[in-house]
Amino acid sequence: DWTMEDYKNTSIKAIREKVGDGKILLALSGGVDSSVAAALLAEAVGDQLTCVFVDHGLMRKNEGDEVEEAFSKWNLNLIRMNEEDEFLAALKGLTDPEDKRKAIGAQFIRTFEKMGKEIGAKVGKVDYLAQGTIYPDVIESGKDDAAVIKSHHNVGGLPDFVDFKEIIEPLRMLFKDEVRQLGFELGLPKYLVMRQPFPGPGLGIRITGEITKEKCDILREADAIFREEIANAGLDTQINQYFAVLTNTRTVGVMGDSRTYDYALALRGVTTSDFMTADWARIPYDVLDKASSRIVNEVAGVNRIVYDITSKPPATIEWE
Ligand code: XMP
Image (cartoon, rainbow, N blue to C red):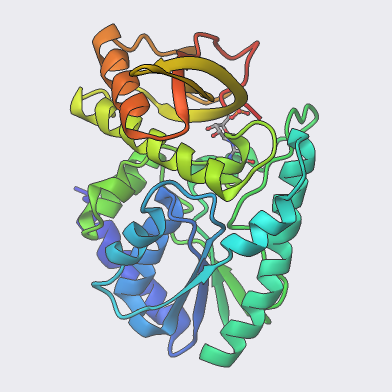
């Protein structure tokens, strides 16, 4: 009988045989697939593995620190690039969703160039490039993308600066639930292994209108409260994706005796099996109520909460 422990041990052995004393590079996004791939490779080759994590300033609350913390038990080289100022500068003044997506994509490419220099200086030449490709990605890549509704950008794109021998994809044979099982087997924390999907452009597609540091901070706080309340209610494994969106609309409210004029924030939750279609999640009113009152009380700059009750289609899951 085949167990995940067997799979882990066999993979580790195969990776060691293939790589020898070579060096591996992996772009770590903090998502489930790249995290499990990183943990498996770190277990196999330790400091012959270099992982690069780009913090574009559009991450959720504490995300960068959580990723660093999760990998601190291995002796891999983790290069964290803090690029918040650069990404915010590239987004300055942009309001159109596609313009913002393109600016984020272009800034990733500039970051890859800078990353190439940093890796060269710190670890020298890299022999292998690793990716967290999983079995459904292998099947997907056969299909054509005729109807592109939004331009998708992924952090794990192929940087062209490495002069590598081969691409290593240690999760190619696994389905998502098997990847998660392997993640637990390797001792990764639940917050990485059971994580909901988070788009490459991050909060950049959850803020309508111009993106500023102030708006990112407001959204990060509100989103963290919403996620906490969903988890407290035990709904985190039932709702496939749930998050907050900061609208560009300010509305009038009253706080104590004074008038407020602050942002309206939307909460979104969906159930779906493939993210191609989705239904809005029937979150119980008391959970929505708790999240709403906590957010308006704890997050300065927000005085109104709405819940998004549209399914996909006609709406998409993300707002931009
Ligand atoms: P939509 O908004 O198109 O989202 O209904 C479907 C799923 O894809 C995610 N998404 C992205 N993921 N890069 C990504 O890596 C992107 O540019 C991107 N845009 C949307 C979204 O979070 C949802 O899970």
